[in-house]
Image (cartoon, rainbow over all chains, first blue to last red; front, side):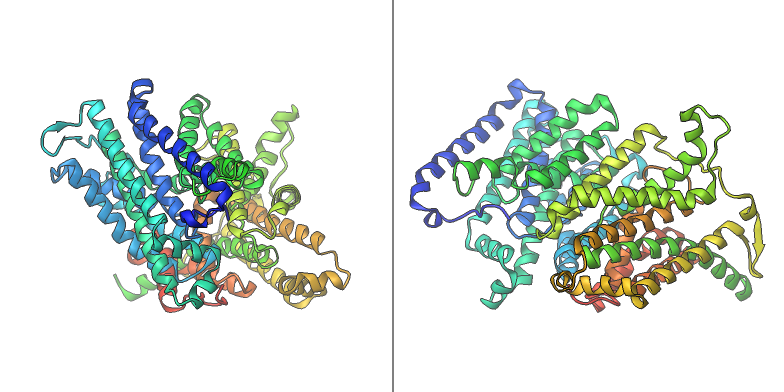
Length: 326
Length: 303
C-alpha cells in the first residue's frame, strides 16, 4: 500500500542518515506540540485532537500495518466512552480506572468482532465490521444505562490518583497528553517489533505469510484486539474530557471520520494519523458555521484523497524525501 | 392470545416485513451485479436509492415551483421511469470520471470513494431539504386504499410494490442468466481479458453495468417514496442492512441475493411479533450466526 515501516538495517544505506533526521524532526515536532500546545491553542480543542489522534493511530495499526479495513471502529471508541462514563458516574470509579474499564471493554468487544470478521477476507471484512458496529449502536440507543438519544451527560472528571484535580484544565490536558503518548509509544513499539513485522508481511502477501508457517488468523486477531483496545482508551479519555458520551461516538460516521484522518495523514505511516486527525478536527472546527456543508467537504476530501492522494501527506513527503519508517 | 390471532399477527407482520424485504432484494441485487463485474462494493448504493426518492419528490413537488410553472406536477408513473434514468446516468458519470481510476487497486479504495460520494450526496440533500424527511404526496389515485387479504387489510400500494419489485427481480435474473447480454456479462465477470479479445467492448459494458445497478437503486427509491418519508438519511441506514444481507447471502449469486433479501425482510417482520426491540438488530445477529456456521455465506463462494 504505502511505504513499509522497516527495521534500521532494511533502510538503504544512502537513505539512512536522511531517514534518521526526518524521524528526529517529526518526534521533536510531535513532542514539542504536545507539551506546548495548550499555551497557544484552546486546551479542550487540543485534548479532542489528541484523543482522535490516538484513535486514528490505533486504527492505522489495522489498515496501515495489517491491511485490514475496519468500518466499525466507532463501536470501540464510542462503546468504551459509554462504559467509562457509566463507571465514573454510577459507580464512582476514579478516572484512570474508568479509562482502564473502557479499554478492557473495547478489548473484549474487539475480540468478539475481530473473531467474527476475520472469517472473511478483503472487502467483506469491512462490511462485517460495519454491520457488527451497528449492533453496538442499537444497544447504545436502547440499553437502560446509556440515556438513549441524550447519551450520558455530566460525567465527573474527578481526581487522578486521588489528588490531582482534573477539573483544572491544564491538569486534565497533561493527563490526556500522557495517555496519548503512552498509547502512541505502544503502537510505535508494536510496529517495530517482530510481531509488527509479521503483521506487515500479512498485509503485503497473506498467502505467503501463511505458507511461511505463520498463524495468520491469530496475528490478525491480536492486531484487531490491540487496535480496538487503544481505540477504547481514546474514546474513554474523550468521554472524560468532554464529560459526555453520545450516540455520535458510536455512529458509523465516526468510523468514517477515523478512516479519513488516517487516509489524509498517510496510511501505514507512523506520524500520519496524528497529522490527519489534526487536519480533520481543525477542519470541523473551522467549518462549524456552514452547517451540513461540513459533510459535503468531508465527503469531497474523501474522494480527492482516494483519487489523487492515496499515500496521504506524510506518505507523500516520505516518498519525495526518500524517508523510511516515518 | 389465541393461536388464530397469533397466526394472523404473524402473517400481517410478515407482509410488512416482505415489503421491506423487496427493497433489500432490489438493492442487494444491484450491489451484486456491480460487484460481480467491477469488483466494487458500492457504498453509495443507499445514497443513490435516496437520490431516486428525491428525484420523484422533486418532479412532483418542487420542479414546477423552481421553473415558475405552478401547475406542473410530474406524478408517480412518469417518475418511475425518469428517476431510474436520472440516477443511472449519474451512476455512469461516477463510473466514468471517478471509479475508473481505481480499477486494479485494492477494492477498499473504491469502497472509500463511494463512501465519500455518500457523504457528499447526503450533505447536499440535507442542505436543500429537511433532514427529518418530507412526505411524498404523489401516490397515484389508483393505488390508494386497502385490499382485503383475508387475514388483514393491506394497503393497495404496498401490495403493488411487493409484486412489482419481485417482477423486476425476476426480469433482471432472466436477463442475466438466460439472454445473450447476460451471458456476456457473466463471461466478463469470469474473465474480462478473454471477453475483450472476443471483440466485446468491456469498458463500455462495465460502465453500463454500473449505470444499470444504480438505476435499480433509483427505482427502489421511487417505490419507497410514498411509503417512507423522503429523507436524506433514508439510504444510510439501509445500506448497512444491505451489507449484512450481502454478507449472509454472498455476492456471487443473483438469485441468492434476491432470496436472501426477501427472507430477511420476512424474518425481520415476524421478529416484531415476538420481541419488537430486536427487529432492528435481528438481521445483524443472523449475520453473526451465518459467519459462525457458514463463513462463505449461504450462496457465496469464499472470497
